[in-house]
Amino acid sequence: MYKYIFNRIALMGLIMLIVCSITFFIVRWLPGDPVFLWVGDHPTKEQIEKARKDFGFNEPIYKQYLSFLKKTAKLDLGVSLRTRQPVTIEILNRFFATFELVFFSMLIAIILGFPMGLVSALKQEKRFDYFARGLGYIGLSLPVFWFGMILQLIFFGILYWLPLQGRYSGMGSLDAPLIYNSGFLLIDSFLSMDVDLFMDVLKHITLPAFTMAFGVLGIVLRTTRSTMIETINTPFFSTFKSFGFNDGEIIRKSAYKNTFIPVSTVVGLSFGLMLGGTFLVESIFDWPGLGQFSVLSILTRDFPAIIGVTILYSAIYVIINFFIDLFYVIVDPRIRH
Picture (cartoon, rainbow, N blue to C red):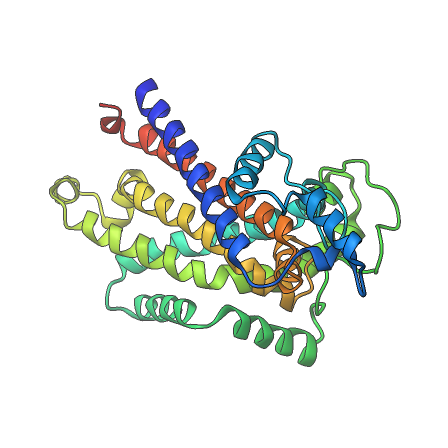
């Protein structure tokens, strides 16, 4: 068990080193000079040289790389060339908005996709099965940016049920400070008993969350369905049926556990997929998260910000998969040996 965990932690460290290295060199080879974003319009030669020296761009590439690794190990991601604020601060200010959106989207996908997959496996070649499979195909086929704009057109432009964009009503900060301030507005407003703010935040997150959840719902649904069909055809399932249990009872009591490992793998991979999907969704819905920050950073060649966001996304993805590996051990003790 301990050896298994140690191997996974060592693998995590190696992956992060590879990601940091690839990101550093790719960003350095991109066209354009980031110094001009810092010095502004019509800089003097002295200003350009000073900026290069301050950021270490005048040093050999291997020295820049070693300095980058040392700073990254200390969680020093540098200063954003666009906002002129520490990248770590910029990421923290936007992280909770993105994580709340991704978590809420994943929750929707699991709550809807997992039971629909189980029921679809029970009702093979029936109307519900055709409906569920069709829904899964549609979810996998629709481009996320197109689906998001269609939802905006219907629920804001035609029905006027949900807001078009933003995280909550208002342009600036919240009207009144919350009792709880963890950064997750849904949880904070609920715990602070601010019903109006909770409903407002819930309305704003609904469209972007369903936009992101729809594609992952199809993946979860199809994975659950195919795994459960394989389970139904196993000998232990037939043994239970010989004792008088019907299919639904067998699944409720035992068989659904067989879907945990493949579904948890898909959920972990899909979480990373959703993080990447926030680039488009946050831009469409003007969501003040990391995705929108990343798009602006790429457009302005803000190299420190690009590297910082890439490292954060990679770290989250690796950590989630680490916990999924631990979940494997809990569900299937044979993996320990």
